Image 1 (tube, one colour):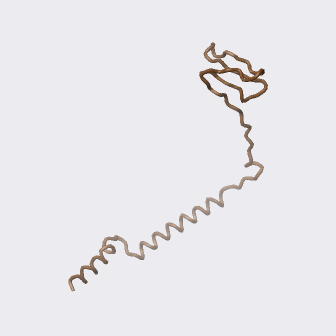
Image 2 (cartoon, rainbow, N blue to C red):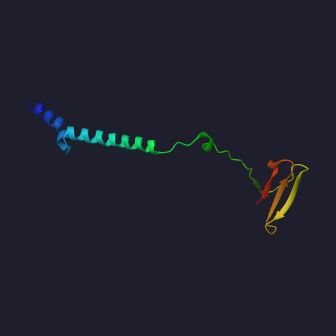
Length: 104
């Protein structure tokens, strides 16, 4: 008999700890989720829809420059140039833009 009452108290303990009754907890959670859904739908309706022509922006990618400790001419179109007060040595190629290099 004693074990039966202990089990019933243990089962009832989580319900006793909750400050809100079950019906209030479910009503609160559904109302907050419903209001969140309604706010999200209102935001999506209020947002203007962009036309496909405006949303497609083509970026022209420019090649960077390789940075190496020692630069060398890779083809006969490569020229060495000193810039920024002789601080950097650049290799600039008129034939192949992949050959651009900077020492440093």
